Amino acid sequence: QVQLVESGGGLVQAGGSLRLSCAASMITFGINNAGWYRQTPGKQREPVATITRSGRTSYEESVKGRFTVSRDDAQNTLSLQMNSLKPEDTAVYYCNIRRNTINYWGQGTQVTVSS
Image (cartoon, rainbow, N blue to C red; front, side, top):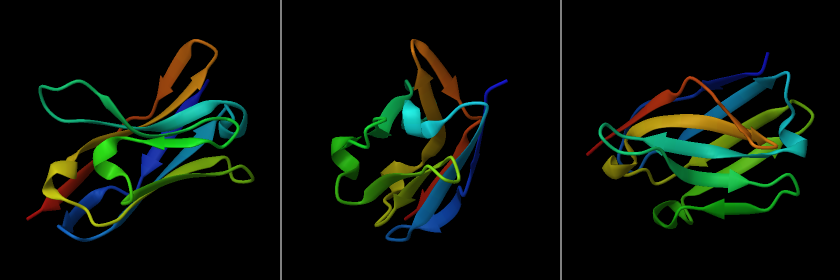
């Protein structure tokens, strides 16, 4: 069965950096659209950064210039480099991959940015 496992979350001070990684099983990032989403309590999950199977990336406005999504096709992993972190980036971050009409999600990893 499809499995996505995230790693790399944690606690960081404002201005710091974190790198999230997502490893996939039974599904391939390189031939599907994928991305990172985040969710805070009481709010809907929202896209942060996405990458199409052709490699085109897009970013939520507030993270442009600070976050970078990338894919390693050889390792079948998806990453999110987060720089210049702000307290408002605090959330649970989820890895996502979409195959046809089905969305698959990781278990989520907590990112907490202290001021």
